[in-house]
Structure formats: structure tokens, C-alpha cells
Length: 232
View 1 (tube, one colour):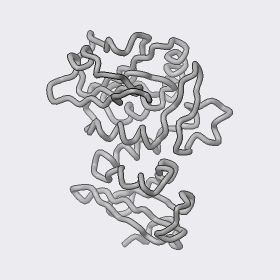
View 2 (cartoon, one colour):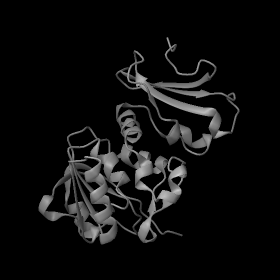
View 3 (cartoon, one colour):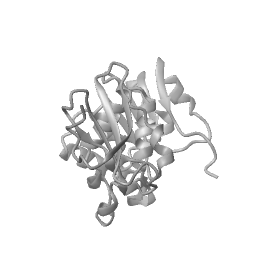
View 4 (cartoon, one colour):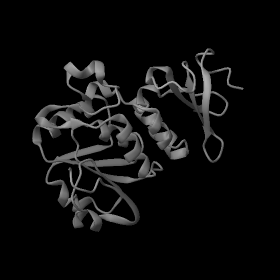
């Protein structure tokens, strides 16, 4: 029974469920299965009985080819729900706020960017967070990814090399009452040895290799997500 879906005129193009059947996701279209127009597509996640419905349409990837990459397992559902609770528009410059939920990276201060929502979701999901993790983030940036992690783990230790970004992110996260976040200014490749070991480490910027200190600070059986490779 999907009578609780918001728009009865949409056709259901895809359905997925978590392993235990407690969560369901519906990909629906107002333009038919062949439509390439992202505006025709909508994504909803809810409990199996229709309660706790969350509209995740703003976080759909820009093209249909990428829609299948986010899994609707327990972890994926939690990530998407967390992203739906974080006010992304507050983490971007005011001149970009109308585009805050577009699936693209946007410029922030200090010549840096806030990652596209799709990439935030994929990287966060790869950590397979359960809610009890002690987590290290390398590259606080605007604080958006930090906020998403804060919704999903016990505590986030986040390192930012640019002081202006760190101060701004710390103030915004405090104003939004994220109380399980600690930010400091440091070279992220050195990690945070006095708080190690970590259950999960997320590196938001690319690196030619995995920094050894981060490996040393990861718990056995812990998970690290880091983009590796030449920017070119």
C-alpha cells in the first residue's frame, strides 16, 4: 500500500527496501520512465508502514545514470535522512543559497568548495556508520559534511588547515546546536593522535596517497574513506 505517497499522479519507477524490511524507498516520476529531466523525478524514504516519510528529492544526482549508486540499505537510509535534516543552504555563501540543493559543488570562502550532495552521500555511506563511532574528519570546510557526520556518529573530531574556515564552521555548528563536534586548526595529514584510535576517518580532499599517520590512527576493523589520485 503506497497510498501515503504525497503525489498520486506520479508513477513508481523503482522500489527498494532495507535488509530487514523496515525502510523502503520509492523513485517516482512525473514524466515517465524515459524522462531525462531531473525535475520529473522524486525520491522518498519512509518506514515500511509509511511513517516518517522523508522527501530526498533535493539530493538526487543530476542524471539518471547515478541514481542507482546510493543503496537503500539501513546505512544508506540513515545517511539520506541525516542529509535531509541538515540545512545545507546555511553552509554556502548567501549569493549561492538559491542553488544550495543543486547537485553540484559550490564555492565558499578561502577559494574552497562545498562538495556536491551526491558525493557527500556516497562517501558517508561508504563509512557504514552505526551511530556509535568515534570519527575523524579531515577538511572541515564549510562544516556541512561535519554536520551530516554529527547526525550519524557519537562524536566528530574535525581538522581544518585554514583558520577562517575553522572559526566560521565552529560558530555555525554551535549556533545549530551540534554539540558532538570538536574542530581544530592543524595539518590534517597528521591526524589527531591524542584522540586516536578512530572507528572511522573521512578525508574530504583528494590525496596522492594515504597519509601514514591516518592509517596508524584508525582502529583495527575501522574504515577510512579518502579520494586517492592525481587531480588531473
